[in-house]
Image 1 (tube, rainbow, N blue to C red):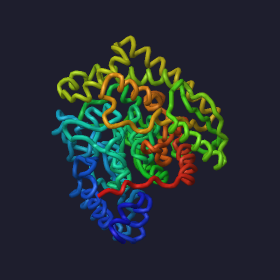
Image 2 (cartoon, helix red, strand yellow; image 1 turned 180 degrees about the horizontal axis):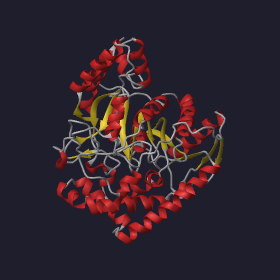
Image 3 (cartoon, one colour; image 1 turned 45 degrees about the horizontal axis):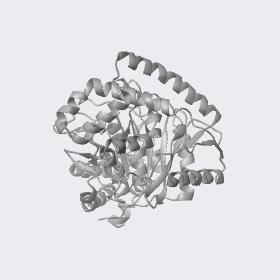
Image 4 (cartoon, rainbow, N blue to C red; image 1 turned 120 degrees about the horizontal axis):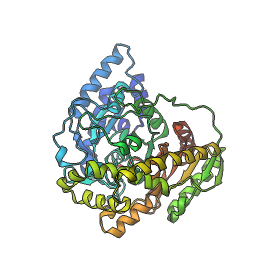
Length: 466
């Protein structure tokens, strides 16, 4: 088995190959690290090196298999971790110089769960400063490029994770999402990304203070991968319970039977979508119909009001707990974006925060009622194909264009429902795809529909540089 064949495999294929003895975990990890050495310098997706501990983990896994033990469902699968979550022995930088020496003394729950499932961490991936943008550049680690086209964004804030998956640097990329940071990078890099339900994957960083209410209610960890089977596999691993997160919910991954009835919303709440995005949505609707779904054009639940809740909750805590830190870091991109987002949300004081939390409850109720009629919502991931690099900081007008195009990215986290970004191929302007949304804890519906789309669209191609 050649190294090229191993690193280009899906996670499910790698785990199966190791388990069957086709190749060892050490061979798989050596192949993966060789691929990373060849391709990562061109895109700067992986910014912290875990090679030594990856090789040691692979040796331990091979020893387990030799003893007849089961290492877990990920069984040697190469995984990357985003630099904004704790991994023992590595700095939780979140893309900022002030945290370059903030070395974690313990793993976060999601990292611990990946290890317990047999995953092997091969590197840590880049994010914009403070994980604040849909682009990935910071003064500490530099800029990440899209492996398909350096002129367009790899997305953000999990831009490093998506670029790593698309370039074959890992089989599964860990990401986080508070306003699209899993879904948009997956879209921009032409792979799949799953934002789980709030409460599905436990979260905690011992290296810093507990998160404020906005991140507690909206920020989640989830997987980025090239096939639905890998998202399914990695979600099961990531979502194991952990007492360190009191918000974690012990909900089954299989929610039972559902009606194959979907709503198609081309332009939620008046979004103006490009021809490429519209064409992808109609293509996905036709694919679902051919797979036995009933798909009806219908308005989505409230997106703009949900996006306002997201902005106010996020900015309430950022203004309260991170504004001074953003000023001290003096990252030009983060400062500009923070100013623009603060202007959009306004000054969020106690009264506004309380009213926002009250409004959120009513919106969640509306969305839950919607999913009693439709099992699935098909809508844009973004209103445009992937943006040109650094468009959001080019001017206030350009930021406003980006911000509006990301309406669905911003709205969905405020509700707490799961969403799946599905790659459907490439347009003349770069990768293109669609977004699927379902009721809370119904990731199984998203993955079922995703598998139907994948059966017709095929696996996303790797960006074969290096």
